[in-house]
Image 1 (cartoon, rainbow, N blue to C red):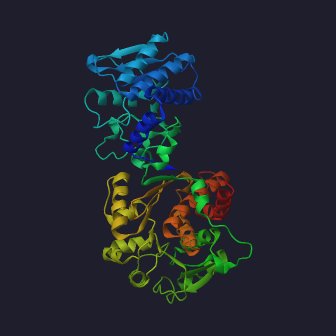
Image 2: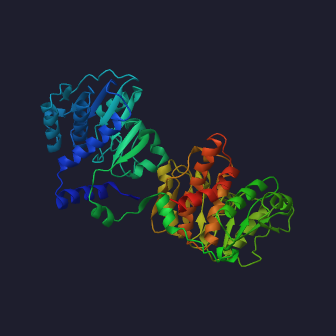
Image 3: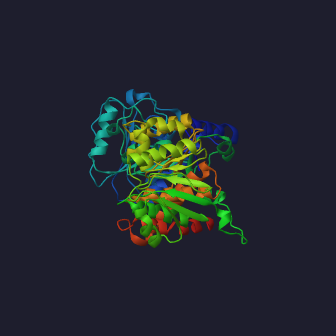
Length: 505
């Protein structure tokens, strides 16, 4: 699914109105139908409801929602903030007139200061104060109102976007001056801001409603932001011929593990095998022999000359892909081996965990990472490597800069994992959930991506598809084991099921 900037959406809106003969009022009515439908499907008309409407088109949506709710038996109290008495947009004025013409008597038009209504935890609040047309952070009395709404403990439904939030980036936005919605009903598309952890307390649950914007305009509008779903991955997965052998599905090398951390190598290996690689070799210290051979007997074991750590990463065969990092440790000998590997291998590889921690100790090594390589850091690993970041948004913006500079792919792990490509395109993941917040989950991801890379997928495809497959495997494991009980091994064991589910989508 494409994700559009606020300006993109305005243009699509404009094309829909100008070229397809659909009036702005008709679009407002469609928004109201969608929002009111969502509300009536969740709450009964006896729910005490308060609607806050701004003077612009977000307020127009809110007024029309009030009309729809009134028609279905709700008795909302509506507060229309028409400061100074002359600030309503044309559509907002028309929606006000239609609401009053319906016989509705709960409209309170605010033209100056006013006493806030009593709000309790039992209330439903519909937030239609400001939409994506907001140009500056909220100030003055609006911040007081927003704080009052947030402190009420009421259930809050925001129309299109929580008031006070910008659809794209929120560098200057203070969370306490943004409505903290329980549910955000977005019009046609989710906003970029919805995918960043910083904004989760404000966005709450989000859903989109289709109001029939121009499909031609949507198809023709270019974007660098995407939301990856099952169908997107199904399109890129390669079918397997009946007359094929393991030689057709690549040979992968995982360099992982050290004394006390061989479990990371096991989980990465299980992920790689379940993702379909033809042949897998695990290079670990000699102490890992019994561990790998007893837990992952399908993998070949390539012992390091050292007993308890990896001191030599020189590939002994012509592998199609190399994944490095899970459970390696950061011993000086391991650091030296990684430096040699990075400076001699010229094709893309997957770097994770301790490989990233070693890079953070030797930052100059980043200049030698092969073009197209895939780095899979969590927040801490990214900040150690590329500098401390104050927020998820600043981290993503830094990842865009770093990816372009070094021509590498960065997978920022977390809920809605963001895969950042050197061309500036960003792919947010739709699969996965809190069950995956468990030790070793990232090691499984390293194995999955390395496996896809070995099978001949391009690095950008292997990264995006691997993240989705890994997340879906986590969802399947959570359904079987529960959110609390899911382990990384469970996730690895469900990778094959995830691929089958995608292929049968």
